[in-house]
Image 1: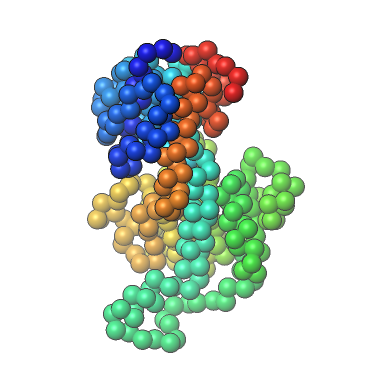
Image 2 (image 1 turned 90 degrees about the vertical axis):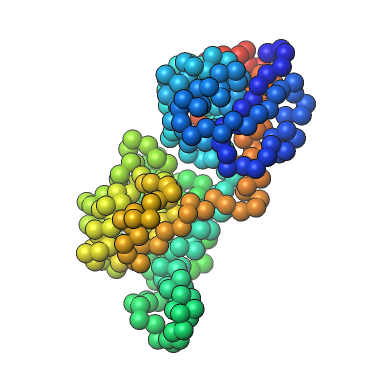
Length: 331
């Protein structure tokens, strides 16, 4: 791995390259930003790169075959569902993400959406701005204490939600197919199967990765199992929820409402169906954000590149079965 190497940033979300340059300063690299919106642009941008810091363009075996020098692809986010992990593994390309940069932020945003579903803060503020002062609101506000929160997915973020919710005098249920009951109990929640959680929860909060198993799992059948007074909160991935089924469930009073930070089409067009009702609150995929998280995700992502440039495996290697294209030295 001698000579000048090129590291390419293909995502345009981060301004400038000062942060990345600071981390990679000790290495003999040319760091360039080449924003990409499609596969063709990414193939061209990455043809000479030893490492890529990527956005949401789909990366599959065909595209990987056009990246002959690529040792690592790093996604500065949690989700890597746009990257064919099996194809990258077969190609000898390390894939890494940053799973822990926004745990507190996403959990806090989920709690904000949950509390808004209880107290209708957004609607009350809008009413006051519109000149309406109504000490007895026209919404079915119920007492918070004694409610049940169901957490689907009990990893870092789901557990953080449980910790934050512990002081609200709520019953906490959790379902995660990859955890045993004792581990869920240690995280502060009561284990429940999927259907029981849906049926008994007043609020259901999603904290799952997007996989073949989870795509569309909150469909008409799942929504039909929820209480008519229940709310759904999604700060995970938009495609986990069937948007058409969600809209139908809300408009037919199958459930009381929803609050989502992620949807199936981002950014949504002005006529997206979820905009049809004010009983579904949509925020703009901002749950991950804080000033601190914004820097952390950049630093941690480019540190993974730095590790590969030193001949080490990334700390957050998504495909541990990979045989890298470079000789690996001890960390």
